[in-house]
Image 1 (tube, rainbow, N blue to C red):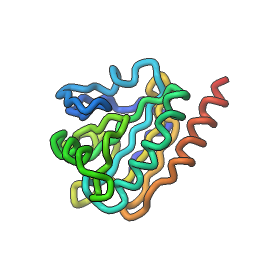
Image 2: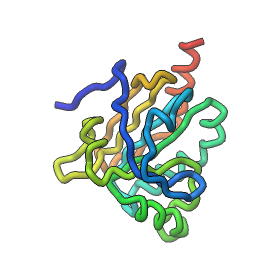
Image 3: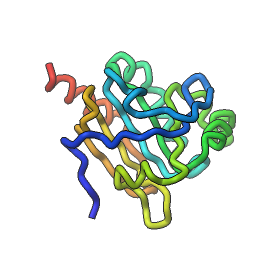
Length: 167
């Protein structure tokens, strides 16, 4: 059975990541990256796979709104940071995602997928979204099977609902 992390502290982690400016860092920690901000963790199966580009591009189109709401975003898969970088450099018309304005975390060891209990039997991440408040408590958890894409407007609605509740 899948663990429910809602109302629990988000498991902290450190990973290699491609940053919004295209640089690679080897030791990005969740606690440092999201310090003082709301957090949105978006797990997805693999770079260059079906559905993933459309989801991440839909997320990219909402980055201005997310920044206005003080939300830091990290998308995670089991790919290397070098695969993430290649995906960013691949034209959108060829299945790439372009220069997205959020971090792409690398979970080569699968430890992060396991900590969030979203690893599939064949070793990739399910489509999972975790909304964290400013104290890094998980406030929402949405998990879907691999062929089912996420609705980014629903993600924004959850953020708005959380922030409205807090005020």
